[in-house]
Length: 435
Image (tube, rainbow, N blue to C red; front, side, top):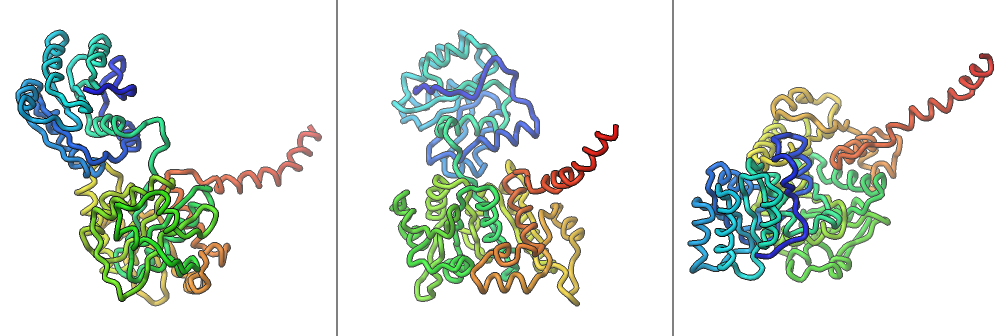
């Protein structure tokens, strides 16, 4: 059993508490697990349920997880004739002196490189030290929560001291032509300008993508080459395939060539997005309005999902289908974000924001009014809306979306108060002099 220097469990601390804030923090720290095999052997059915629940999470989607009952005794019997996986999780009701000899027997069958997480009942620092001496990678005390377990596994296979991998934001339209790509591009540009962070836009609409047009670029190569041979993609090849649009914004452009046939596999998408997210803090994935296995995979694997909808019945129906799917498949993640676009079109009957929110049980992230002149002229000039018309209403909405997506505070909101204070300064000074 291999030992690790880092452990997220501390026996001197209380057991994990079922608290929404703690779960959110653990979810933020738990990173995607690589393609490893994990086998669990449990004494307690509740611990088995936690393992199975974690196995269904998107962070463990690449791992092969199997859960068995019987505890450490079943694990010992199983590995007498079978090779051990990358990670063994044993849940045991044995305490103290009774647990250690059983772990010694298990160690005799463990292959080099196999790691072990022990789930026990005692919150005892002496026991914890003994387990570390024997090469146990992690010790957790029941009751355990799925997010805490995922964080522990993540810390074994991802260095907790390094910068986290980039966040992936998936943008999809509830219906074709609702402006999802436009919002994706403008929000990504806003992220790069306001947060001063590196951002990459991945345009997965290979036949009709507009990323090149919107940023006035005509790249020779792009994301299609990466998807065709994902195993070849590394940092150097990625640098050659990306197109720089500004100091901090790059695009992974679509080829937009109809003579080619595009067959995208979910596995290729996983590999390409994983390589990109290792190089930048934020990845904005521009998804086409179409449904395929790879589209579903990208949505389910993304850190945040932004659904753009126009205020009509077809958009409402489609948005509800997407929201229901995400709620069912992403139980440990936050709700998707909803953007209502092209609202208040003259003489058009629209479904109200309140009706949308009630039907989806979802608060709207932003509502963007119809502004034909600003959007069309910006697109025709290869500019973002704020570049073309800083006084338009939409740029403020894009900033709002960017801040909510990244859970950042918009410092711009503090400026009016500061300026008002500076304007009053002379009057305040006179008041002080009179006194």
